[in-house]
Length: 313
Image (cartoon, rainbow, N blue to C red; front, side):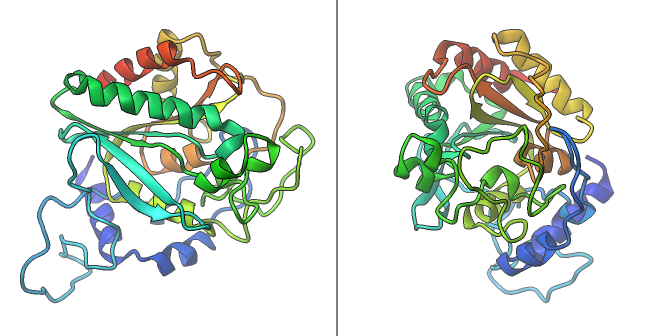
């Protein structure tokens, strides 16, 4: 990462707050087309995690040279015992958003499940199985790696049911259309999921789940991200057009799994997507669809995990 990019990320960490997220979100670029429709947002420059605790005496803020975020900045990278949950925020209904960390290396990786709640409950079950496997096999984490697993980004949907009505969060929002990249309030639903009414939210980052995940991600320096979905469409790299690093990650997932790549394209108009936003922050990101709405594909995704832990673009 070059000096200017690192400086932008530090400046962002020094100034962002929950209110700022909403204000910036309202400035999101217009709607894009296709599964990878997204325009990189310069004002969402990634943030390196802080490397030292806050000083004991407050330092006068300086927008040019500040290195340590103030108390209203994004959370610092959590220092937790390996395999223990860290609560990074709460859902609309007040349920915890839990992240599990494994390893203590400088190279950070992230797995996210359950963005569509109980409708894709098997992604959450897969995350729980991977968490249990890693707790029993901590030696499988390379010494240079810290792996984070956000087991359920939509716990309200997970608690509601395992059916169509469980896709949205408690506000009826599709959390995978609430990110500030190619966001639009509505979209052509002709070839998209349309079983029940669902929205993209009143504006980008309108939902507490989106805001909490964004704040957590921007407090880190992730080298790769896998977002699990179901079912059966394949592997989709983030970016519009898909950026090179995300394509390389998608190809690496395909090489150790039976999942289709490139993924199936039925003509759905994708807007405000999580993986596209991550790619706009310079994070190689992919959506990976499990083979059905019931199966965990554990053996396949154990291979994916072991590849991911050693993957480099």
